[in-house]
Image (cartoon, rainbow, N blue to C red; front, side, top):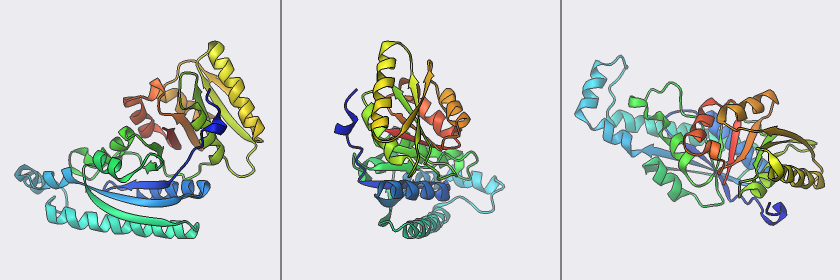
Length: 282
């Protein structure tokens, strides 16, 4: 394992990624709490999905809207007004929450494709915070989940937020095959609530490598005044990880992005099913 003291978990900004799908309160609350814990600036990034405007311009969309039970047609003018109102509401929520915690904050609105805009607006040391895709979306064809899915594929550390903004009781997932172990440990140590004595470690796999990882990680936490609580999981999956998280009453699951069990669709499954925060460290 790379020495964790040599790999500082630097955070330039905590960015709340927002769009028309709602979930502003959960995303903003988690971003502000995370930034306050790390002593970082918090920024709001509201993305107007260009695909929505393309869809609104299609004749078939207008025809479907007229036949639907919706109170008003889905067209470009209504979309523009709704997005403007949503951005204003999100900015007000972020500003109020950040001010209460004494944080520096900013907010901006961009229009484009979510994946491209997230990449263009962030640097490597930024942390993205995004809410889960809505289970019931008012947007046509389920486009309300585009931002969440784009965030899963963005090469930035990602905090997947839920309604609870608590982050003080981390469950730290470590795998002997991960190159990100040191960063995961340092991130979890910074997230632990002030005065918290215990940090739960979940070591994946078995054999000599897993035993050595357990020993090194426990020693690292002990040197910093934490009491490590060690668990093992032979076959990790999104369901198994969330089960351990919920059973232990943990506020946040902290894990490396290079776990084979959460690559590709596994990360999206975590986002959809979690009812606590999930921090994916890159």
